[in-house]
Length: 224
Image 1: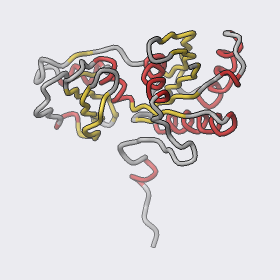
Image 2 (image 1 turned 90 degrees about the vertical axis):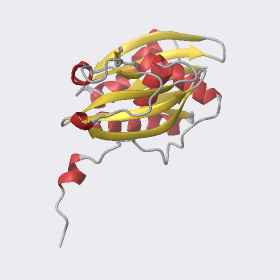
Image 3 (image 1 turned 135 degrees about the vertical axis):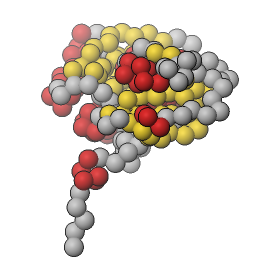
Image 4 (image 1 turned 45 degrees about the vertical axis):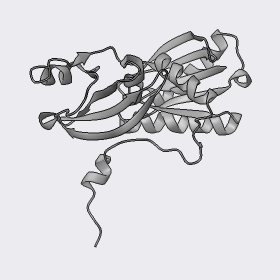
């Protein structure tokens, strides 16, 4: 199975061309994307990845993208691009939560993992997951003030890829781990499993998982 995996959830995005099946996984190429360039660079980068690896778009078997949480604009651009490609090329789409990706990548089978991401404004996104052998089942995802964050009843790992969050939480939670961010190749590894298992999203209906409302919604003034 040949796929394109995309992450535009933060200021440092990436795209990966990956190939795999039930027993193998290979990253053919991983390309970084700078935040603020997603709308201009996504399509050219996808075309370049395919051309450099001598594949036509018809060779692709599916697409995978991060659905959230993270940058409102980045997520929207990424999902809109992938939805359009899936509809035009008639290819399946799998979506992955970045919190889920952290749990799958760093968690151990059988444990509960609480993954934490910097949400800005003194807040964090938190995702509690039960980790399986090759996937993770969501217990809940939520947003809370960093100062009020109190993990309770977590028998497994508490982890974050964000240094500022790690620095604030470490004094009270000695077991917290600072891990490397999951890039598009890691998203692709999870996405291939989903695609092969038939866990696909409807491009016409799938939406971004913001967890919280956008600034436009928060600061809008109700009409008379």
